[in-house]
Length: 58
Image: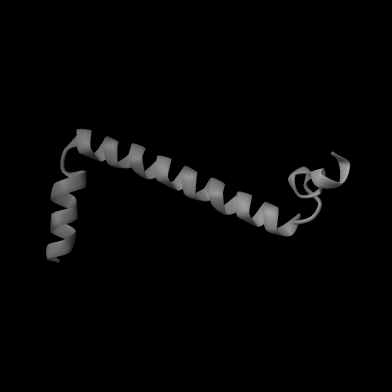
C-alpha cells in the first residue's frame, strides 16, 4: 500500500507530472519496441541483408 501511495503522490497526483510521466513512458516504450522489432527482423533475415553481404560485392 505504501508503494502505491508513493507512486501516486510522485507521478499521478498533479496533471503536470501525470502528463510528463505519459510522455516519458511513451518515449521509452517506443524506443524499446523499435529495438526489439529491429532485433527480431535482423535475426530472422541474417545473411540476407545488405550489411551482411556487401563484402561480396565491393
